[in-house]
Every structure is written in C-alpha cells, then in structure tokens.
Length: 390
Image (cartoon, rainbow, N blue to C red; front, side):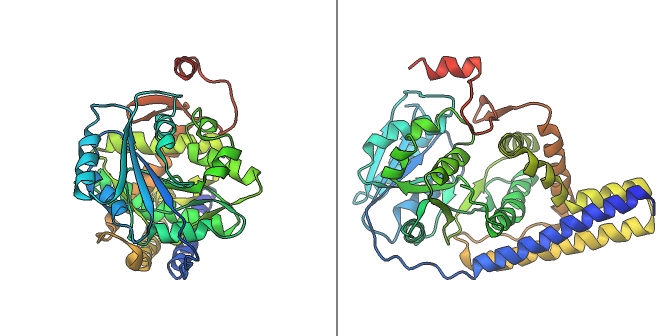
C-alpha cells in the first residue's frame, strides 16, 4: 500500500469512527427523559410562510393541535398573492376556536426576507414567550411542552430543536436530502452539543421577548443570511445558554431534482464555511465512503475493495441504528433510509464542500444572497439598496 493509500484509509477510518460516535450520540438523545413543564406560560408561535410547499397544510395543522394552552399562532407572508396564504386560511377555518392570526405585509427590511417577514409579524404577537418555527416543520402534540420546559430552565436564553428529514417529493433528490438531515446533520449536531457547542439550529428558535429586545430585536438579524447562528451568538453574549429541546420535529424535503437539492445544500455549505471556516474544512473528513471509493478508483486493488466494503457496512449499520433509535420520537411514519444511496450521498457532500470555496453567492427561494460570517459588515451594494429603500 502506497502513501496515498495509507492516507485515504486513515481518512476513511476517521469518518467511520465519527459515524459510530454519531450513532452513540443519537441513542443518548433518544433515551433522554423529557423535562416535565413546571409552568405553561402563554406562547405565541411565529410561522413565516413563503410559496407553496408540499405538506404545508399538515405542518400548520400540527401546530394547531398542540396539547398546550394558551397559545397563539401567527402566520405571516409578504406577498398577498402567495399561494401559501390560501392554505393558511383553510387551516384557520378548520380550527375556528384556535387563536390564529394571518398577517400579510409587503414591507421589506433587509436582504433576509424570512426575518423581514417576522419583523412584520411581531407586532401581532400577543404573548412574551415567542417560538419561531420554520414553515416546513411538523411537530408532535407535546412540542410546545418540551420547548417551553427547556426554555424555563435557569440560565437558558434560547431553545432550538433538531430535525428528522422526510422526503415530500418522489425521486432520488428528496431521499438524498432526507438522508443528509437525519444521518449527517442530526448526529453531527449532537456530537457538537456533546463537546460543548451551543448552536442555534434554525428550525425552532424559542426565546422570551425581553431577551429578543436585549440583543437588538429582529433588526439585529435581518442583514445576515445565517440569522439562526447570529441569534445564538447574541444570546450567548448575554451570558445565557442555547439548549436543544427533547423533541424531534420532522422537516419535509421537497426538492424534485438533483439541481434543486444541490442549490439548497450549497447554500448551507457556503453559509457554514463563512461562519466557521476552520471547523467547516474539517467536516470533509466525515464522509468515509467518498474517500474509500477514491482509493478504490486509484488503486484498483483487493485491499481497497475490502476497505470500501467494510466502510459501507459500517455506514449501513450506523444508518439503520439511527433509524431504530429515532423511531419512537418521529411524528410521521418514516421509510427506512436507502442504503444503496450512501456512497452517492457522501460524494455529493464532498463535492458541495469543494465547490463552496469558489464563491459566496447563494440562492434562497429564488433570491441571490451572499454568505457572511455572522458579524457586522458592510453590506453588498444590492443589499444596501434594499435595506435603506423602506
């Protein structure tokens, strides 16, 4: 075995060990006893929507059927012609006794349209405990109980949640996206928590209104692509903790083509690279099938073939183990991950990391933006034009 073979074997072995560590972390999360709520303060859920999404109605319904009281649901859009509004109004009609407010306001406040939408929605929030939840999030009836219980822990300023991916479209692209969410992002986030990181993961951002005011309000986030990361950073600067709640929402993956999935995941890659460049560079090591496959292609030897087979077997066992560990936490019945897609998933992830270094432009819901390091910066010319036009 030459030097290149030894190096690729070492990298592949490291990735396999990280996969096993991820399984251990996931099993630990699944076994956590949920915190019992010692109080149920009134909550406002802020749900920004934008455009048609498969299973959007089911996602909204899952928030309307929370076993929690009292709570208010504020759904907001910036375009009066947004097709998601018809779904929101249909859901409101299905739950006439629920406290649901639908806000339509075209005002823009910066390049981050999600945060701009939330700025328009916030005046309609009736309560001081705020839960910001992405539109594609599907939650169990005890979601609010578990989020609030985590937020009421002493010293906690912000609560976030993990997510399990579920394909919402036919084809390979959605299955690859779900594989990334459940079997790469989720265990990696738990490993990060285990080593002391306190990252806001974005799907859920729950905090008190007073905390939001102290960090400068939503206006402090509107100029950044990674609003969740900036929010977590600002909350930690107050001396407060960011915690992961003991609940597992489902995120629907709606990409129908590999191009759409590539665009979506390249946005993630460039965003993370801008935020934590050193850590991001190391993440390329966590895809052992890509490196063992490269060795197989270069060496064409039995040892390389054996290595590839062993790594695939380890990844398959870890993938099935994660599926089993999360079974009791899932809201939706989830089809098992396709083990034959694992090599393609690793190759795609490595390619996205490499390409992320060739620019900082990303596309988010049809809008071109620039990945930024999550700190105050001089905006690009086109961003400045938007930020100061209102």
